[in-house]
Amino acid sequence: MPARAPVATADAAASPAASEPPVSTRERIVATALRLFSERGPSAVSVRDLAEAADVTVPGLYYHFASKAELIQAVYQARGLGRSVDEMTPDDIPRAGPVEARITEYAERNFARLCEDEEFLRLMHREAVLGDPDAVEVGRVLRDRYHGRWRAVLAGSTDLDPDADLDAAVHVISSFAWGLFVEYLIQRDPSVASRIHDLARMIAPSLRRAR
Image (cartoon, rainbow, N blue to C red; front, side, top):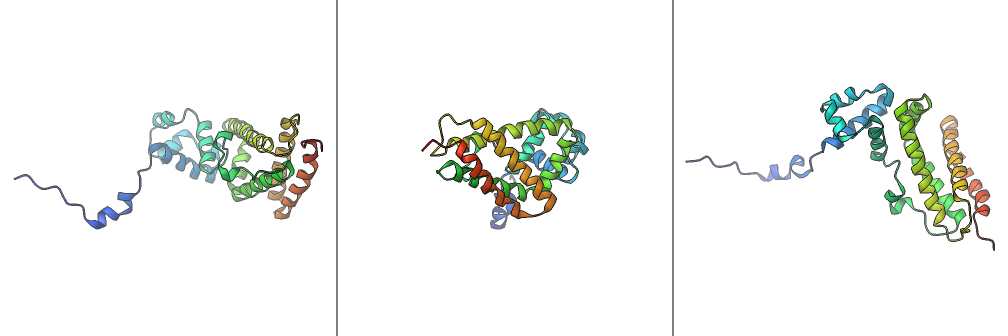
């Protein structure tokens, strides 16, 4: 007589292993890269280091990520950083309103988000400053996406002049915002964020419709 299959118990059915979805190989690689990059920085972690720590082969890692730069970009996205315009969520978009208010709201959100990830960003941008080619390549992608998000924020203002030079405004705002964050890292003074209001007050007149 054939043996019966074991009957699942209530405890087994309710166990975390039974209820949680399995982690994909790609997710495991990203989680491993996030941990190692946060500890050492990208340039100090080889592809072989990543593959061994994630329990995959080097070809297996390259099956999921065409390059180390692509993996670094995925690590940023895993932390909620580096979204494209199409990936912006309702929480990313300021409330409808005039350009000055939207600059202030979005810049304050960005500053707070950067401060939350300051240790990670400090390490990752150190790599770019030192010339790590993968970090530099990812930096270009993230910069372009950041500019794209800012352009979308400005374009949605209710009092925007149709002829306003959005590209110039985006470059000024993004440079100021990053410089403010760097100043915060040096001084450890969160009150530097108050200057965001001054920036918005100065930039808004160049973007508003004539009254």
